[in-house]
Amino acid sequence: MTEQNFSYAVFEVAGVVASWLVAYSLGAACTWLTRRFVGVVTCLYVLWLSWDMLAIQLDVFRFPAEGSLPIRVLGIPLEEHLFFVVHAVTIWTLILIAESAKPIEDDHAL
Image (cartoon, helix red, strand yellow):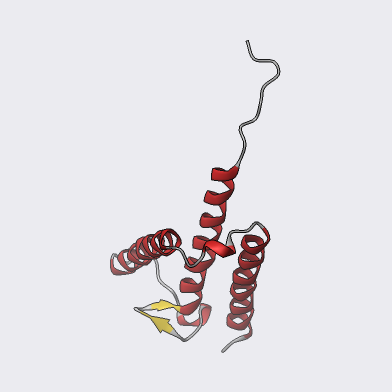
């Protein structure tokens, strides 16, 4: 593992931890075992995984060995799978924030 690969892996793990901490502080962590959460995360994961696999198959982009971790699942580096998790938790947290937001009252409405 090169220094660049290790740095990127640390960055991805930090992203997972940061997403978890934000979601936990906003109360979203208690929803992680619900069917809705599992469904949303699974759909997003399958979407992004399919998108990456299609792009690789069509030779739109690649994951060079020197720029990614050597561990690959379905031909995609492990850190890309971690990114999917970070993104899914972030989207889930934003959905919960949007659902719980109160409308802004406009004092200057006509």
